[in-house]
Length: 251
Image (cartoon, rainbow, N blue to C red):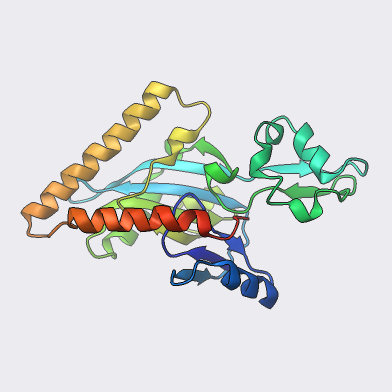
């Protein structure tokens, strides 16, 4: 299974739980008084972030961003240690701090020739996953499926579905995926982290996302919904900032 904090972001504290001992260690390392979730492991290699938005006055929403996530690997040669493979890798060697501590217990082992070693488990850019912009791959069947899912969630107008799948062609048909997380107002159109996205475009896409968010918020207030108080907002923000450095190390 997978353990993750109930309050957090960017993959902080996400761990793969393989045994009772793993779970015991996670609980012992977790901050006292904080909550965590346990989820069934979806053992599929494909992961994507599907960002949905329905603006005020729209009968239907649309998918505004798709991010395809890839997990970094190194391949053993039967001679170099895992530490050497990481440091020698064209990409991993530029950000070794993301991987060396995570694999500290086996850095001096020598993977056999041809053996793939996955360096990151959590699908977060800040934890080492590689993001690619897949927004151009959206199909009408995908939009219809995520519209149906979003309509089934009361008052869900804005957010990102993180999904896992075996074949993205199935996702394009609106099938063959499992939702592992739904992120609301704090979500991000993560396609901006594709290395090929120009900086000005990334800024523009992010500002457009925030404009939609505030427009939705204003419309909801006009409908009678009460916003979170500033005091509670600051209190929740501060609690997250205090907890995040204390979570167990991310896989």
